[in-house]
Image (cartoon, rainbow, N blue to C red; front, side):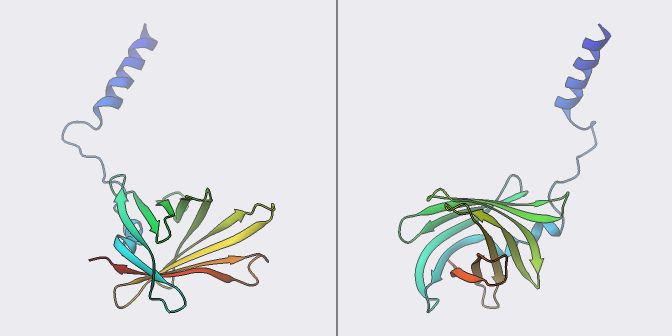
Length: 171
């Protein structure tokens, strides 16, 4: 009987939350949780060698009561992808989980470096070889955000830019 009573009492406490008059501490409100806020918004994305060719649109919003950032990417050629980005309080690192319409799944981790968000990881290619990935988002003085996606096939000795885009506020 005592075991069932303890279980019942624990369930009641779990469901009712903090004691009356007490409020739980707000989640995900630290300064570190705001480090990627410069990327929030509705964007037109330009790329190409001139940095002015439309390559897509992106909507970046806060989700999970401000604990994560969701990216909804739509490329100009009809592809799309989504990422979920969040600060891991245990490691102090930002993490991104990206899924593209091409089936690519990418996991990145990192943080702020010299005013830019820099996330990196490894992608296993179809040939079984790992390829280093590094994506850098940099807020620009004119309100745009640049995104440079780089890859390395030689353990980071040489990097190749696979995507360079400039996010400008969609009006």
